[in-house]
Image 1 (cartoon, rainbow, N blue to C red):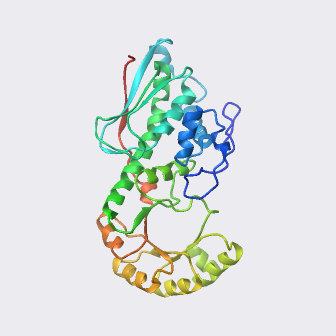
Image 2: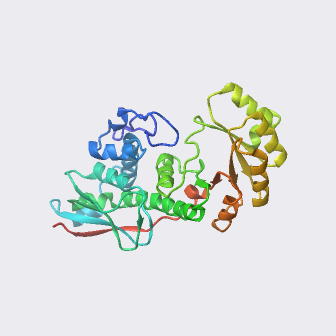
Image 3: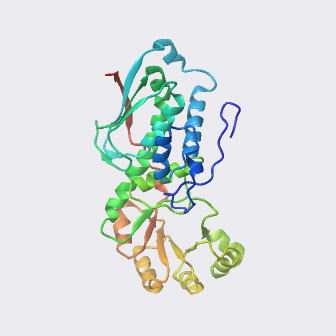
Length: 325
């Protein structure tokens, strides 16, 4: 939503590093962010303009057209301090550059940044992640919005890393779904990548996923697949199947990727044998960290885990204020 005081810039994609394959463009760098920060965001597969918009929305929501009354009342206007973003627990960090973007839309003066770790790094409790020196008022006004995003993304990265660790040594990768927070999809999927996972489609338009309701409407799983192939011949198509019979149908029809919905590990192993490498296979449903290795050992290519983005707890990160040196 665009308002007079917050005109949201139009976006053109998610950058070179994004799994959706959208072409990168210098327009991504045409934001109000520092060019060096914009470059870092783009290199990570994030659109700097979109990140700046998210940062502005977060701050606008927090201020609600006013000022930070507590901070303005208690902190001298000229005071300067250093804020250390510090992990309160062990995990995997994601969103540090996004937190910097939040600070940049608040800070009225230039701010100095010391980066102690990078997105995707494992961190321990008590470890400093990022130190920022600027006006104290600005630090405290930006604190909650920056931490909300940083804790959320780091929580997703930490949960994803747990799955990636369980799958290590197999050919199976954990990947996300479209069960993301509205407006934060590209950031949450970025966090999945930071945790060692891979992204499913970014939108309804960059790949097709034929699910049970499409099958019912089209009159059959093979018919649904063929209808999508004819209408969009260049788009990758994944087809959800509930039975081995449906699996055989869509393999013969030429599906690129097949989603095995609520299959047991034994059924997944049988599916791998039936497909024989003619399509990629993704297991979905019934998946937990305890069963992940059993599914991976069947030879499926992906485990689809919607909980990565819809149910991951935050990673506890705080901001510790100290006197600027």
